[in-house]
Amino acid sequence: VAVPQSGTQNARVLVYEPIHTPTPRPPLDDVKEAVHAPIAEKIVLETLSNHPLLRRMGLHVIPPGGKDMILIANGNATRVGIHTSAGDFAAVKSGKTYGPRIADGEFYNMKMPMFDAHGRRIGILVMEIACTDAVSEEDAARKAEAIRAEVEQQIPSLESLFAPASRN
Image (cartoon, rainbow, N blue to C red; front, top):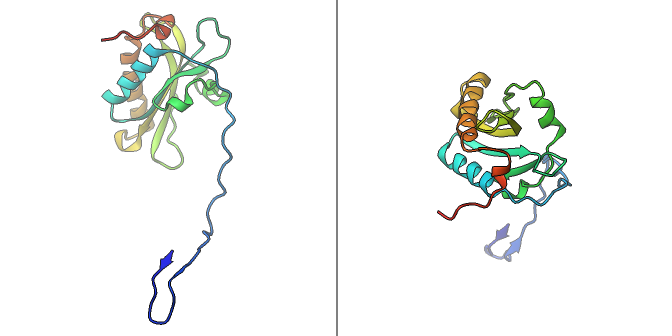
């Protein structure tokens, strides 16, 4: 902190060290794969724009010819290509929507199976709904499932997510 000259005291800089702060977490060493799914990215970004209650949204699938499920579209482009976590798989194993309120109380972390417009299971949809926009986990699940239904109608097939984006 800069301290100006005062009377006979010269100007000086005071240095403070923070105390009682948590140790920073080390950066994640997530394995990433190259992904080019422009239609999926367009769908996710448009859905985020059309639904202000969403804080985040990501679509996980096994790309055609791939062997691992990865995040192919996300509002945060730095996450695209990251392998789906064991926690995400476990959350949707039952086939139901899972969405606990996160400990800090700010959002519901919704995870659910994802389908195409023909009802074929293609992966996992993950989204965060702010607690200010849902009164309970059940309410958040209803809202998340309604958004998923909108998204499904835009996906004729898994392969369509990887088609070149149209120029209109």
